[in-house]
Length: 205
Image (cartoon, rainbow, N blue to C red; front, side, top):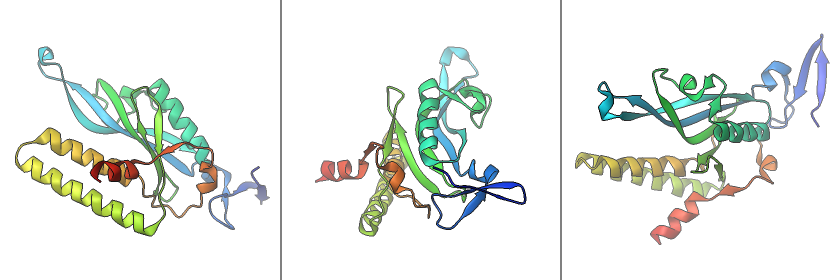
């Protein structure tokens, strides 16, 4: 239950994420911003050669509560429609012929990363478990840096596909580490999350 208060006729809502903080209603309703990362398809100059693909992103809009942001994200990915209209019109480059979502990221009102999910083949989202343990966060960061170094080495030998896979794996693992100061773990009690970090440790063991 949200706690509403009015000051000089202006509605304020108590934030469940910042202790002792009440926000103007219009600010509260935009506490979380959704960004969808993926690839945009562009038609080659000669149509017979098909398409080429470029990393891109789509604006997923805003939500006032974290659970609402997650639910909105799942609905957008399922329908492949974003606030700007059809996905082709919502991505950064409007010339794109199509947009394939890979990740969904949620940021707080300070533009700090909160939580993210990986888009799987059936258009569902596997939300990545936020990790707050300092030791684990350091290990993850070091492993991500190692993957990026390996990617750079592979790219130097023109193994661009391998380099892209390593960079993508590093990016996915980094999603375990929230940057926000919001207190939001209580909202994730019933949200199913995946642990990419433990899977990586098991694979390398």
